[in-house]
Amino acid sequence: MALSANLFLRQNQSLVMTPQLMQSIQLLQMTHFELVQFIAQEVEKNPLLEFPSDDAETGSDNDAQDEPQGRQPDDDDDRTEALSGDWYDNGSDGGASRLSEELDVNYANVFQDDGVPPRADAPELISQWKSMPGGGDGENYDLDDFVAGQVSLRDHLAQQIPFILPDAGDRLIAQQLIDQLDEAGYLQSDPADIGERLGSDPAAAERVLAELQTLDPPGVFARSLAECLSIQLKQKDRFDPAMQALVSNLELLARRDFATLKRLCGVDEEDLLDMLAEIRQLNPKPGSGFETSVSEAIMPDVVVRSSSDGSWLVELNPDTLPRVLVNQSYFAHVTKNGGDYTFLSECLQSANWLTRSLDQRAKTIMKVASEIVRQQDAFLMHGVDHLRPLNLKTVADAIKMHESTVSRVTSNKYILTPRGLFELKYFFTVSISAVEGGDSHSAEAVRHRIRSLIMQESTEAVLSDDDIVDMLKKDGIDLARRTVAKYREAMNIASSVQRRREKRALAKVAGF
Image (cartoon, rainbow, N blue to C red; front, side, top):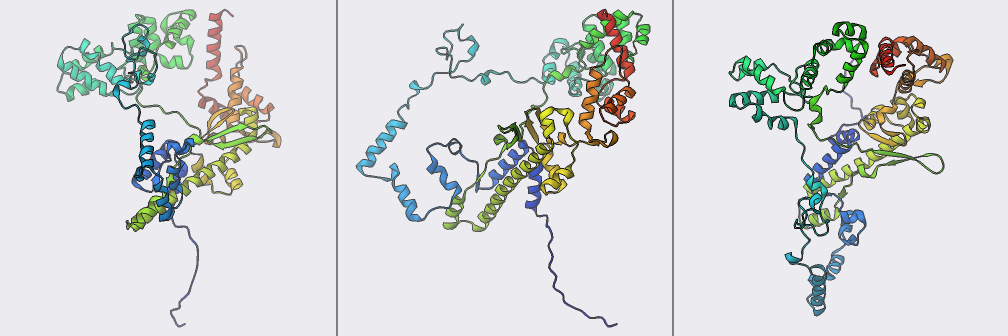
């Protein structure tokens, strides 16, 4: 068979992952804070992008100044006519009189003596100090200017060190120990290693650590939970032998093994419960009261509220919608006057892509949120017990999108409903089969049901995992015992034996 070369024409379509397409995909999964930062960076490097002015948002009378941002420029005659009405372009007597009027109206108060009264340095002391600046009317000040700054744990401890450690070498060791504290106030390294690294005696590092453990907040510089509780009890003068035995056996306390604890501590049940009450008053994380990072409030991306006809009204939160404009007039003006057309064309293409991507992002979030609200209508009406099982494929098929797109949209997005603020991922739960072919149940609804059953149990009838299985079957939920135990442990709920011990001990103290 002879071999020969042939020429064929073939046409096909394929999706090319361009950098712009990749950034469009990334925009879907960005949070509001990340999106604002991204847009700010784009506005900074793209001269054709700009944020809308406040006048345009509030609908002020200066619409003529903002109008060229969103439309093509007029011809030269129109621009000349528009400029001819400006007061600075008219040299006639009428223009001079108009200039005088403008100056009289807008710039009448130009002297410092007629300025705004000075603010009060401390507004809470205005009534006591009549000579304080701003004490006349008590206005024209912002209370946020007087809010004290956040003090970190390290700064708080560093202020106390000179009072307990006069030696400079000891203060150096103390500073190194402060640097090894975690957010909870626990020491994460061996003081002997720090002393050896600084060329000091390990005994000196231990002595410095003992001094540091007397600082405020109580319990700081501990190396374990037992040591943290011991430090706080010593400062309260309550670290007797019985309490020392209790702190040394915290694992028995976690298992609610009160009989063994009574024997080890040498106390009766009433004294043991008093000791437990004192333990509960201690702070297991003494450093948690000091902020290490700025906490950010969660802003919902979607708001759901009921309408007059009984349906649900789904809206995008206007506070989280990004606002950015493309300055077409600037592009036309610069290119017409011999500017860099190639560079500005790329900027214009990038700006148009960004606006289209943001619009597509908003529409996609709206589609996904509307479908979730439609699927979880019973939850919005009656609560978590009626939460339906839902997966990404169901929503993706309903809105004709891919599952990966739905996953990106629901990542780190929040929805505000009459039932509270939830992450969109909250509504996607595993399906649990029902008894005898009934409707399936959501795993989150089943967990809520288990928690409710345990909260309603009495001291005489503590529910075991088998009892919970039987009660769930009566409600039409087919669940294995090991699954009930897994859900219970995930919710940090003790076993029936431990709950029975605790309830009986509390009942004896209460006199029941």
